Amino acid sequence: MTIREFYTLVGGSYDDMSERFPSDALILRFLTMLPQDGSMELLARSVDAADAKTAFRAVHTLKGVALNLGLTALAGVCSEMTEALRGSDTLPASAPALFEAVQREYDKVTGALVQLTRMSGTEQPARIELIDALRGLAVCLMVLHHFLYDLCAFLGAPWWLFTNPVFDVLHYFFAGLFIFLSGISSDFSRSNLKRGAKAMALALGITLVTYFMDMTIVFGVLHLLASCMLLFGLTRKLWEALPAWVLPVLCLALIFLTAPCADGVTTQTPHLWLFGFTTPGFASADYFPLLPHLFMFLAGTFIGIYAANGRFPAFTYRRRSKALCFLGRHALVIYIAHQPVIFGILWVVEKILGK
Image 1 (cartoon, rainbow, N blue to C red):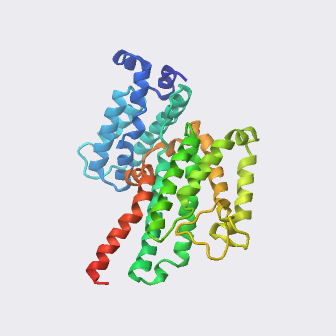
Image 2 (cartoon, rainbow, N blue to C red):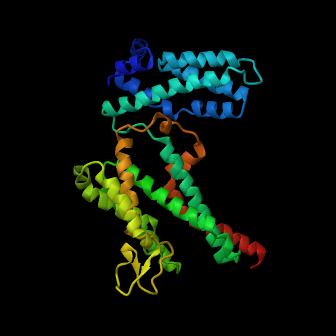
Image 3 (cartoon, rainbow, N blue to C red):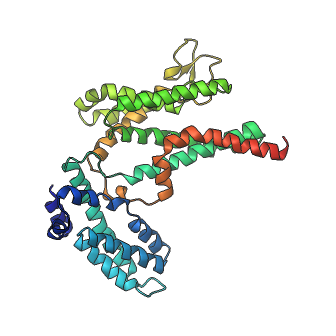
C-alpha cells in the first residue's frame, strides 16, 4: 500500500498533504503519531461518563489532528460531533450515534495505518496498546501478590490474606498472562538471542543479590523469560517451518500435560529443577520452571505472528488506559525495583509500629 492508496482508502486528501510535506516518508512519520494521541481515548471515557464538556474538548482536538493529517472523513464526523456538543452542558440524544461514527472512522484509519506501516517496510509497526495494558495489569497483580506475601512474612499479618483461593487463582492468571504476552512480544524483536542474553544477565544478578539477602531466587520469572527468549531465538526457524496449526495445538496439549510441574514435582533425581522436578530441600524465593511455562511462551509467539504482521483488530491499537500502558512498557524496571521498594516501605512501617 502506498501513501496515496492509504488516503484514498480512509477518505483523506493526499494532494493536500503532499503540498505541505516534502516526502511520503515525512507524511508517514506524522501519521504514525496518531495512535499515540490520547484524544480518542479521552472522548470514549467522557462519553461513557456523560461529560459533555470534556467530550467537546476531546473531539475538537481530534478534529484538529485529523485536519492536520489530511484525514478528511475523520475530520468531518468529528466536526459534526463538535457542533452538536458546542455550548452544551449535557450530552445530546444524538451523541451516541455521533460517537459511533467517529469511532468507526477512527478504526478505519488506524486499521489502514497498520497495513501501511507493515507494507511500507517501516521497521517498527504500530504499537499494540492492548498488549501494553494487559502487561500493565499483570504487573499490578504481581506487585500486589508480592506485597501481601511480604506483609504476612515480615509484619506478621494473617496468612489468609495471601493464601486464599482468590489469590491462588490470580497468581496463576497474572503469571500465565505475563509469560504469554512476552511470547507475543518476541515476534517483534530483531534478535531474541540478544534480548535473552541481556535478560539472563539481569536474572543472574538478581540471583547473586538475593543470595546475600538469604532469600535466593534460583530460577524466577526473569530467568524463565530469558531462557524462553534464548530457546525461541535458537529454534524459531523450526517452528516457522511447521504447519500453522501445529504450534498452538502442541503447546496447549503440553501445557496441560506438564501443569503439575509449575509448583515443582518432588523427585529423588537431582539437577532437574530447571524443568520443575525438585529434590527435597530445594528452595527458590521465586520459582518458574520451564515446564509448563515454556509452552505458554511459545503459544504467545504463535499469536505474535499476527501482531507483527499488523493483523490484529483495530481496537487493539487504541490506548484506553495511560496508566496501565505506562506500567506495561516499564514492566522490567518495575519487576526489578518493586521488591526493594516494598521492603523499604515495610521497614518504615515496622519501625513506626515498634516491632
